[in-house]
Image 1 (tube, protein in one colour):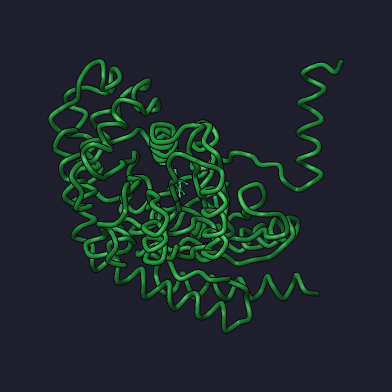
Image 2: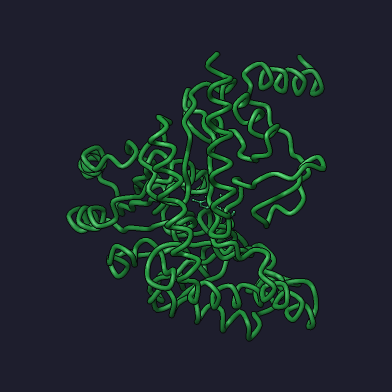
Amino acid sequence: MSSWNDWIGEELHELDVLQLKRECMPVRNAQLPVLSWNGKKMFNFSSNNYLGLAAHPKLKEAICRGTVAGSGGVASRLIIGHSEETELLEREIARFKKTEKALLFPNGYMANVGMLTALVTSKDAVFSDQYNHASIVDGIRLSGARLFRYRHLDLNHLEKRLKSADQKGVRHKLIITDSVFSMDGDVAPLRELVRIKEKYGAALVIDEAHGAGVFGPRGQGMAHELGVHEEIDLHMGTFSKAFGVYGAYVAGKKEWISLLVNRARSLIYTTALPPAIVSANRMALRLVTQADQRRGELKEKTVWFRKQLMQKGFAVGNSSTQIIPLYLGENARALAFSESLRQRGVFALAIRPPTVPVHTARLRFSLMANHSWEQLEQTLGYIEQVNKTMRR
Ligand code: PMP
């Protein structure tokens, strides 16, 4: 029998050999377009702070104001109740998403896990895009529901899977998808998914972590941009990305939300968000709805940056959003590319399995509205330089 220490050593060694070992690293100013790493300033392409709000003075002020009453969430909401600010924030989210109700969760991971475990059991089937976020996969696993993964964005495959579930006598069918995929920057065909959900009598639930704030009128999200928000049963979104703070919500019909209040264990058995965060999220929601200019700038920069990469012959896949992957293939190549860019002052980390499929390691460029044009131009120059040195 091997000892714990031997086993842990072997596991870490194997990760190292496969070029899959991760380290947590200290970084300063991750909220800004220029961060500092090991004392060196670098263009920051690794945050999800798409609108550049995470360093907004009004959000810092809101955090301070929120803390006047105290620092902690103190207990689960089901034990201690919730503050007036929480009540207001949930109403404001519901208005923003045009749903009857909204429910706050501590973060997006817990929202997905809580929502799925509340909605489905081993009697049900969940149809999940192959590239859905890990929190969705974990939620399905924990729920015990039958998992039917369909190939990324492949609606024919989804329909085949729905038909096969019908033959197996499942109780309820639930289709779940990211609206904007976090590692590929492509978009789910929500209009077609609505048609399919209706055809098969399924529910449709979407994760707008990367869509809310960036797309749709006033940043309401991709479902609103595509005009299908009313057909979506539950909308999950986060405050940690375009909104620049922390926390998440699920929005939908009041009965659905009521079921989550009663069954979502990641809500019931955890402490509520601290008041500072609730206060900042209210301000973030206000800032996001007024951020048309930032959204416009982000879009303009994204379209330009992606076009430049494509013209230079780089593979960016089907990205059509602020998330632009540069596909490099093997882990070692992605790591070396990322390291060479860092030496030149560009911070874009390599994304490797299990986050993405094997042989598809990539750099993920995540654009911010307040990246300057010069920063983008210089970055493109460095990408070309690194590419040339690596081909030699
Ligand atoms: N869903 C998606 C699509 C995500 O990308 C993320 C975060 N990376 C989450 C959920 C989890 O959100 P949070 O970081 O707030 O836990």
